[in-house]
Image 1 (cartoon, helix red, strand yellow):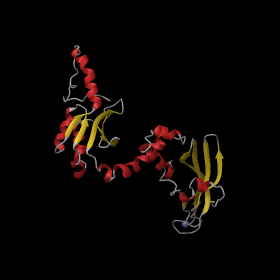
Image 2 (tube, protein in one colour):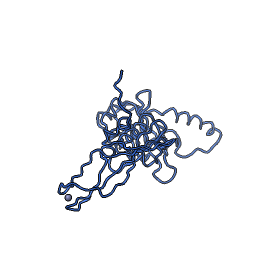
Image 3 (tube, protein in one colour):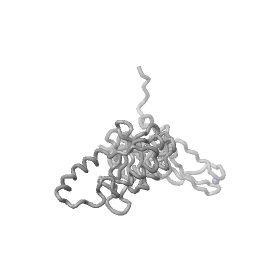
Image 4 (cartoon, protein in one colour):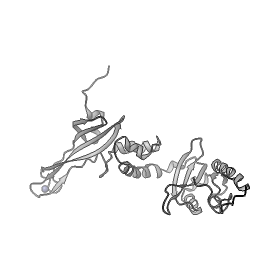
Length: 280
Ligand SMILES: [Zn+2]
C-alpha cells in the first residue's frame, strides 16, 4: 500500500523544485491558471542588508506544459521591496522557474524542444496546446537547441552517407533558398544541418567546417543533378561516391517524354549541368 499524501498542486506541477508554491487556482474548460508565490523570499537589501518593505506587487505569467488539452498558466506574484534606509528598490525574480524574461517556464521550454526534435511537431501545433503564440514557443527553444543539439560533438559519429538538396523555405526575397543536409546512413533519415544558400560554396564550406574525423567518414553523398554540389563534394572529400537521389531520378524520367515531344529544354536543367534541378 502506498503512503498517500494530501492533494496539492505543488507536487502535481513540480512547483517546489522551481521555487514556487501554489496559493490558488482558476479552472476553465481549457485553461488552468495557478496563482503562485516565490518561496525563496529574501528581503535583505542588496546594498546595506537591511530588511526591506513590500512596496508593490505584480503578476508575471509563465506558460507550463499542458495537461492533456488543458493549458496551464502559472500566475506568479512578484513583489517589489524598498529599503527604508538607503531607498534601494528591488524585485523578486523566479529564476528557478524560468530563464530571464522568457514567457515559457524551464519545464515548458524543455517540453517544447522535445516536441520539435523527438515528436516532429510544428511550432504552431505546440503553441496551440498551451494557448500561446508562435514566437513565445519558438524563441526560447532556439538557444538550447543550438547549444545542446547543434553543438554536440557526437552528432556526426558514424555518419557515412549524407543527402544534400536545396529547399525553398520562403517564397519572397533573395534569401529564400537553403541547403538541407541529412544523415542517410541508417534506415531512418536524420536532419543534420540547414545552411543558407544553394551554391557549391555552401556545401564545400559546410564540409570544410566539419571535424576532420567526421569529414573523412563520409563516403557516399546523395544529391540532385546540380553540378556545383558534385564539384564541392569531389573537391573536399578524398574518395566520395556521388549518387542522384530517387526523387530527382524520377523527376528526370518524368520530364524526358515531354522533351522528346519537342518541348524546348530549360537551360541549366540537364543532368550534371551548371544549374539546379528540381525545386522541391
Ligand atoms: Zn538598503
